Image (tube, rainbow, N blue to C red):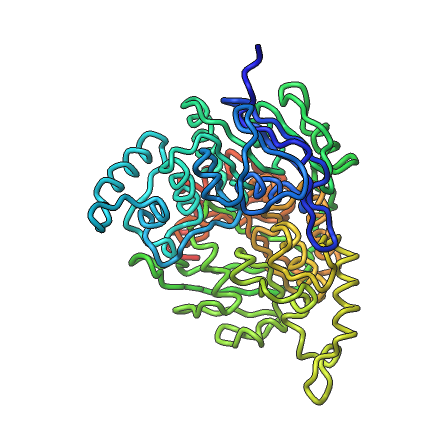
Length: 515
């Protein structure tokens, strides 16, 4: 007799205003397997997993664990059933330590006192066992995104969860951290856990998953064994058409220098070394220059210096010949379009409707504000509706949708639509395809190339090696706050690029301490 499924979600239907997020969906997770959930942005993957974790209640359908029907009204019910979840946007208290976040809600108390020593021992033992190195006393606000994710995973393991849900776990990780996470997932399965893995990165699904279920626009398309399919077939199931996985572009014809960076230095908040150390480079009209590197090597701080989020210690930044080194953010925004690394922190006002987010940098222009200082609501709505249509931004109620209610991928598409549509001569795109599905990635890459061909100078910052190699015309590698090499993507390999990124190789023309 067949062993009962670890989890069955049968005929689940979940509705929101204006949209059916899950339309009669059935998913079955076997014990000891990694079961991937694949689908476009807004296909209903996160919603389905939120139903399993008790964050939402389905209008129809039932959930079974080990063959028995269960009722999950909230995350506490899920935890009691051994179900844990790592969310796409982490649920951590920023001002608490790593240890405090892990034990929050599952504290050991004796005579009214918190027993942290036992908790610390258990957390350190778990981190050792699963290769999840963390500093239990570090504040969440001070650690990298990869470390925050490890904290989330340890939170699940601390509660002895056996069904683990990973919602887009690699969307915010570096290639090295992704490799580590894949190994951690395999270790968890070896320990007898069962994993539901939401992703739209086909190569990761091919690497770790046993089976994959595909959702499209809220509907269940089918479940296949990963060993029986290839990436092209999965992308067809997911998007409903053939997707071109390689970027189609002609050679760049660079024009005038648009961005000129000279001797830029920014002190580090974490340690004595400079976060950006004496960096000099330029970007010309009609080319895509990519800053590549392992996360935490100064790319974020470099972008902050260019966009005004941080003031450099020394050096200068010129855009279109104008020195903007010490200009205000609004004045820079007139010259610099910016797709930020953290869409929630720097890209969107989550509790605003989508239409207001579409005009965040332009609301004061005559097109959107009258001479008397009042917003032109009709014009704002029309503009937002046009961008939603042109850039395929999916939201339950169109322009009036509260941005927080949209999927992460569609929030990203909204930012990209807003920034590209401004038509400026210089665009900084940091991780522009983070959290997007293959169809959307294909579209964004095509848009970046089209902007380049119109004469826009694009500075791309990416941790995705395939994106770095496919999209850029020139690659600048950053290591420990310095540029250590300039590579031609047509003449280099990912292996050589990896050596520069790891600091094992340095171009002689970039001497130490000289940008």
